[in-house]
Length: 273
Image 1 (tube, rainbow, N blue to C red):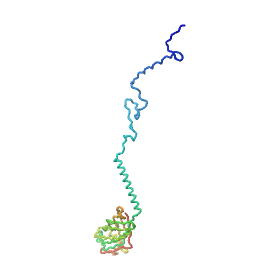
Image 2 (cartoon, helix red, strand yellow):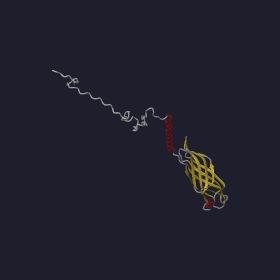
Image 3 (cartoon, one colour):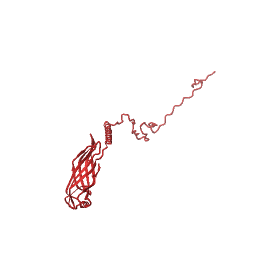
Image 4 (tube, rainbow, N blue to C red):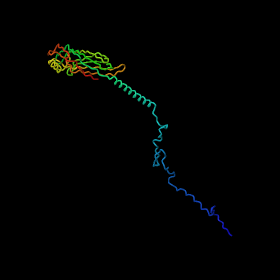
């Protein structure tokens, strides 16, 4: 029996010929761009740039971690200044609170003023536009505070008629203890003081009526400080206004050698700071 020879490889299992080997993959076609295609995603921390002729823009915040070494901590001088400002504010607030509490406890009250007496030893009207006056005033000053004394400095007083100044005088400083009543004397002298003819006519008109009472305005000014032991307030300007102080100056129309005194009860004054 003749046998045919076949050089084809056979399947080791079934004895059938093995399938032909797969052909090799063809080489990639040539392209116009020799470099590889861009990556599918943008490089981390860089903005994608569609134009390949320009480099990609860097991320403006490449290191977002504030704890990294590139984070700028506040300088020691700035931290010290902040602490100093905070301490100063706290100290001022504490001092203000203490002062306010002390004020609530002590309750400063303004003194009480009145013109208790007034006497004119000489009052002349030499001309229609001049006045000569020699006047003595007594103020009664009461300190109503139970825990505070009052210091008066740069004290002055004046007298006017219908808002026009006639005479003024400076007084000595003084101190009032708590719940104290003090009398302050003032001597006002002026010779030939120029005034408007409305003043002379008004004074002459009032002297000719009833008891010859002339209505003057008296003022009192001083710097005052309230204190209790080591605690004291800041200085305040004390203003005292005594309106309508009536002084009887003879009912005669004579222009020389006239005298007079306060009419009625002591005149209460208004006080402000």
